[in-house]
Image 1 (cartoon, rainbow, N blue to C red):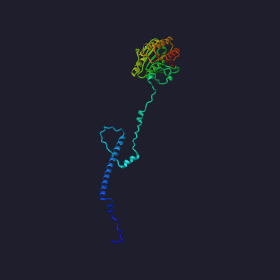
Image 2 (cartoon, rainbow, N blue to C red):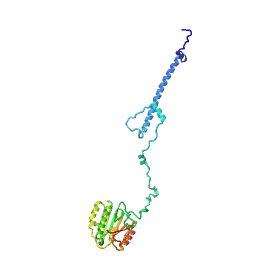
Image 3 (cartoon, rainbow, N blue to C red):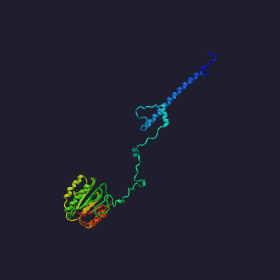
Image 4 (cartoon, rainbow, N blue to C red):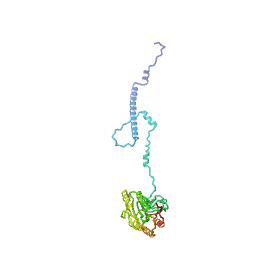
Length: 329
């Protein structure tokens, strides 16, 4: 070695000079312990994050989690540091699931037509019925030429028409002229109208047919209501066809049957004639109606002749029924 060569320092000697061997040993143990602790903390963080993520997944799986129900195993999701950082950066979606439109519709409140309090439960208004005319349940709503407005009665749940005159109700009485003046095409038309009127009735409706001339006859020979069922109508058709005719026009006994003997009372009466009759019929019918709480509407039909029009209009007006003139065949 030359004298001019520079002597380089030994790094090991410098380290030994700085850290004594005992201190180096303590530092090595401390670093080992810190590494173990850091590893344990990392495991705890991963497990905690997995449990939180699993419960969030269960909570959004289509319904609330029920404790103590279900037999399947619960799996835990282990998330990495990157997953946890992504969750922290984006935030957890814990919003309430939206209710479907079908559920929302089924739970929507139903608006009431009328708010009814305890004090006015017995006086609920169902609307303005002034446009319905003078109807009270079983009257006429329309007619042919010359029909007078207004009707009455107590029925409901059905209806029919006779010579184009409509009436509502469940029980209908026909008081029809079978006198000699009706012979020919007029009586044929009357029988046809009777059959068609029965056909228009609901099977729950009831009817009675009373013919008048010089003799009063209840078709079927029994003063009682007949069902408008298919069988009941078919049974009546041949009786209508075979009914004999009389001579005079005497309708009052037929009204006494319908308004005096028949129970329960009709919802509407059809009264048809082609001729004149005694004016006393008007007073007698009014007297029978006065004994009832509500008059039975009488729908008066002058057929082919208007000779009885004045009296027919009086009966219709007194009973809150209608008057109609129907030209002959």
